Length: 182
Ligand SMILES: [Zn+2]
Image 1 (cartoon, rainbow, N blue to C red):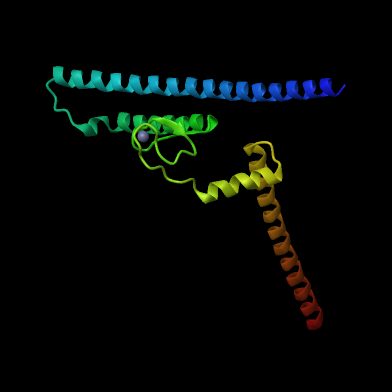
Image 2: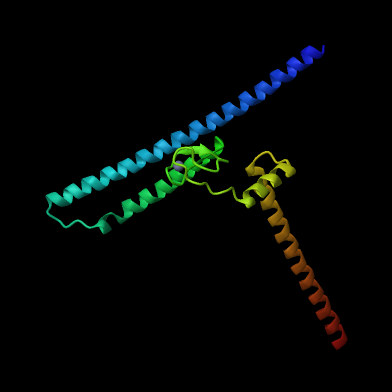
C-alpha cells in the first residue's frame, strides 16, 4: 500500500513539474512570437526610411535626420517594448542578461561566466515583495492588483463618508442656530 502511495505522490509531483514547464514554455513562445512581430514592424520602418532617403536623392533634395523624427520615435517605442518582453522572457526562465556582453546568464550569478563581469546583487526590495506575495497566498499578480484597487476604492469611500458626516453635522448646527434666532 505504502509503495503505491509513494508512486502516486511521485507521479503527481512529476505532473506538477511538467505542467509548470509547459505553462512557462507556452508563455515563452507567446512572448517570442510578439517580439518577432515587433522586430518585423521595426524592419518595415527601416524600409520606409530607406525608400524616403532614395526618393530625396532622386529629387536632389537635402536629407536631414529631422525628416525621420516620426519614424525614429516609432522605432524607439518598439525597441522599448522588445526590451520589456525580453526581460519578461528571461524572468520566466530565472535568467538575466549580462549588462556587459548581453549573454543570457543565471539570475543569481555573481560573475558572468562568459565575460567575467561582476554582477549587481539582487535588490533587497525585490526579495521583500516576493516574500509578501508568498505570505498572502495570492495566485497571480492580477489578483493583487485587484485587491489594491478595492482597497483604494474603500479608502475613497470612507473619505467621502467622513466628508458627508462633517457636512451633516454642520447642517445640524446651522439648524440649531436658526432655531435659537426664532
Ligand atoms: Zn558577460
